[in-house]
Length: 191
Image 1: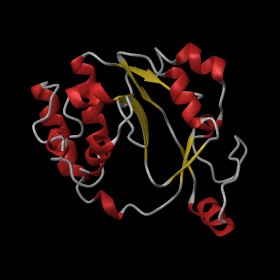
Image 2: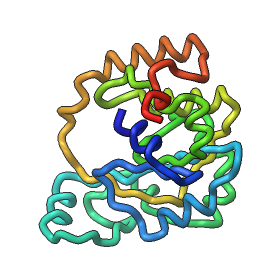
Image 3: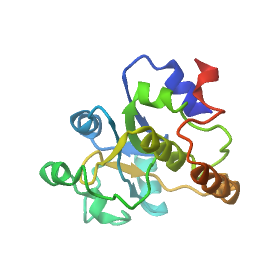
Image 4: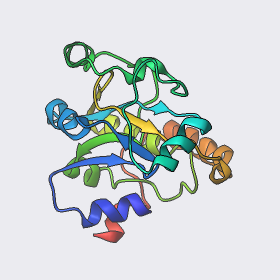
């Protein structure tokens, strides 16, 4: 619901979406801008930080550079920003992997509105990002990858908010079988 409300209130043509538990690479927005193409949405990755590194960053009260060799950084390949490799992989990388990641995703606002945004049947964590991305694809919007660009660093936290994961996954499977590109309970009520 909150993501729908935010996009409904947004006035720009292009939406870059993140979560509140992230640190952004200094070139994050520039990368999303450089890779944006009409008829496409962007899906980036993230570097998960462990509990110890997150505690150290929070105690310092300032962001610090996260490098390939930084202790406590998981998925180390996602710490690498290599623009030429990102350009080479943008249209082909991760075709069979997850369709969406709300923590690092961008899209044209009019495409989002056309599919009626996020399906508000999803509550809690899990499935809502993939559902949106799959509906965008059924509508005709292609996925582009931000491998080696658009870097974000996910601060460690517990997972108490994942209480509806199984319910959300079942709903995602059901909606995927239906093959609709527009959801019924979405952003239109907030416009």
